[in-house]
Image (cartoon, rainbow, N blue to C red):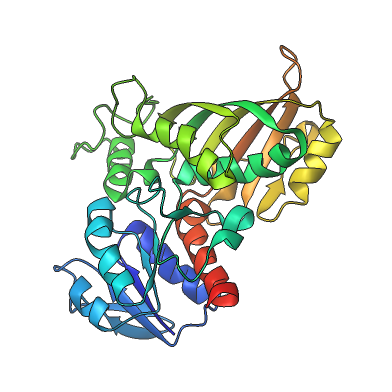
Length: 328
């Protein structure tokens, strides 16, 4: 099976390639795809050099699956062209997420919704993935009424230039600014652009995407997204009001028994999720699980994952694995 990785030289694309190798994905030919400035260069995969090709050449090579991480405009232009060539596209950009004709997939939750007719499948926003993975088993058990989430997001979510800005600031080097302010020793309540309602695009993704993934509009989500000077993963403070009451031991058990989740929750030993621990791992880590004592049937928890892996590349590769195992 031919598999294309579009955006193979980018931050997420390089991790996608690494994961295809790590997880022994059953491909017969890898097609690394990048911008014109990279075409003709070589990229290493499974110990062999593979020549990078452009988008048009990649379509002509007729891959069975193409995993995109090249930005929304590239996806809007090229995903339909790959799909027309009988290729299934898994897209990591925001381009198709809220399109009512496209599936928005977190494999542990709704991979079974994918059919052979789905030629373009959307990968959710990084901070949405970890949120819904922690919420899904609890929603099934207790039915959510309202979610309030505050995120503490890694600079790696903005891209390599943001990581470079932070590293320059740590070293006292003046360099290009991706953010409107310094990020080192700072916290910016500003992820993506501001909208007319006063929220950012990132916050509205968190508010809207869970409804589509869980196929349920009965609950509300309010989000505040903050960029902080870390590079290992995104963290979220999550407050969930349920319609039914719960027992904390049962909550821990539900989470512990959910695929893709690791519970780290022992205050006596200072055990709780942190980006430094989640970095380069594929699970979503949940801890600080406690009852909100100010309101009935409400839970607080702390949720952390590597935003470049489960928040992006791992989720996309898991979708591809499901397609190979259950759809094709």
